[in-house]
Structures are given as structure tokens and as C-alpha cells.
Image 1 (cartoon, rainbow, N blue to C red):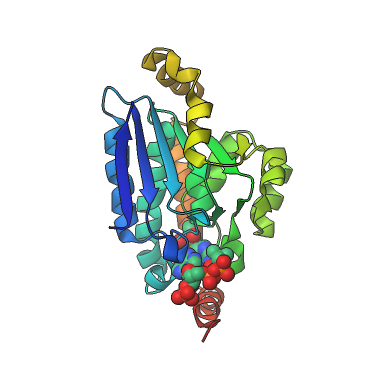
Image 2: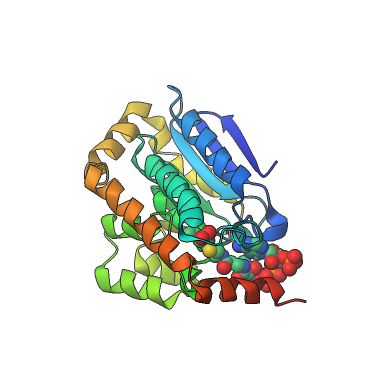
Length: 252
Ligand SMILES: CC[C@H](C(=O)O)C(=O)SCCNC(=O)CCNC(=O)[C@H](O)C(C)(C)COP(=O)(O)OP(=O)(O)OC[C@H]1O[C@@H](n2cnc3c(N)ncnc32)[C@H](O)[C@@H]1OP(=O)(O)O
């Protein structure tokens, strides 16, 4: 199985369990995300956590060996619209979700973390929208989420266009990392939620609902779908397919 969902003490955890390929997202992980979002709707759930197995990678984005078989704009649009819709649902459902960025978060992996409410980033982790190195753009809503969450326009434009992973301290300066931790990731989560968990679950859910009023407007979901459409349009071009070919052939 490419993911694991566990529930303990009011916290539902979603872990990508593909450490051998830096927790890249395949179709099974996408299906797992849909299940995770369903489980967040249970009455006794206070927080969600998304993380990657191991200590090297949170998620390295779409699995290039799987998604490389998608050649046309229409073929790419299907998976991008599905993932963008799931991340929009994650961002707008009432339960606060923590991205426990235990390692490299790049491409769609950085978009997944961007859709979460908090980003708890390991001191050794790096994160970036590297899609540009493959001649495409973010396609799962990540840029829209970050703009709506208040990352300054010029900083966000540079962060996306440079397509370069940043270290934890720069992610904090950017306003992407909520906080930076060192040591055990689960202890970091426990410490982060300690005070909030002492209050009635309705408090955290109500404040998230209040603060996502803008995000929940229909025109924002349309913007997220436009982001998927933009990526799919670039996906079809030779520049993208040649870049992925180079990545997959680099060790041969
Ligand atoms: C809208 C989202 C968008 C989309 O899906 O359309 C994307 O997310 S595009 C994909 C963006 N992600 C990438 O471009 C990352 C590609 N991977 C890397 O740059 C590196 O693997 C890195 C930096 C994650 C780790 O580098 P390192 O040198 O430490 O390790 P290796 O490169 O040797 O990786 C080990 C092993 O994992 C495979 N791998 C890693 N990431 C992916 C991936 N995203 N898809 C498929 N396979 C991946 C890598 O090929 C190695 O496999 P091996 O068989 O050992 O060569």
C-alpha cells in the first residue's frame, strides 16, 4: 500500500509510504487522499496530519514514471483536476490540517503542504515548486492557495518562477513554514497542538471556517481549476516530455 491512515487521540494521520522514491504521488496515493479527507469529517476529529514515511522526503510530487505516460493536455487535465479538487476540499473542510514536512517537499509535494493549514518544517527539509524545471507550472492549486494565504505577490512570483527548493529558514522568512522543528517529528506535532487540543474541538474548526471564508468562494475553486488547466496545457508540449525523459534517463 502506498499510504497509511491512522487515527489516534482525535488526530487523523495520512502518511505516504513510498520512501524509496521520496514519497512520490501515484494513483493509489491520490485515492488515499480522498479517503483521508472523508475520515476528517468524523465528529471526534480535532486535527489532521499529512506527512511522508522516513526522514528524507515529505513528498517529491507526482510520480514521473507513472504520470509520464500521460501525453496529451486532456490526459494530464484529468489527474490534475482530481488532485486540485482534493486539495481544495482539504483546504476548505473545517478540520485544521498540519503538513508535517519531515523532508524534501517539491513539486506537487510542496503543493500538498501548501493546501494544509499549518506547515511544521524539519530543520533539514527543503521545499519548492520545482515544476518549472519540467517546463510546467503548479497544477494542484498550490500557487492559488499560497496567494490566498497572503504570501506577498513578488515573493510568491519569485518562489514559483525560480523553481528552486528553499531551506527551512528561508521558508520561514517567506511565510511558508509556520514553524521549524528539529528532532522527533511526532513530538513536534504533539508540542504544536498541545495548547489547542485542551480546548473544545469546535473552537479550532470554527476559527478555520471563519478564516477560510474567502477560500471557500466558488470563484476560488474556479481559480484552482484554472491552475490545473494551465499546467495541463504546458504538459502536452515537447519541452515538458523532454525534461521528464532527461530525469528518468539521468542514471542510465
Ligand atoms: C502538479 C504536480 C506535478 C505533477 O505531478 O504534474 C509534479 O509534482 S511534477 C514532479 C515534480 N517532482 C520532481 O521533479 C522531483 C523529481 N525527483 C528529484 O528531483 C530527485 O529525485 C529528488 C531531489 C527528489 C531526490 O534526489 P536524490 O538524488 O536524493 O535521490 P534520487 O534522485 O536518486 O531519487 C531516489 C529514487 O527516487 C526516484 N524519484 C524521486 N522523485 C521521484 C518522482 N517525483 N517521480 C518518480 N521517481 C522519483 C528517483 O528516480 C530515484 O529512483 P531510482 O530508480 O533509484 O533512479
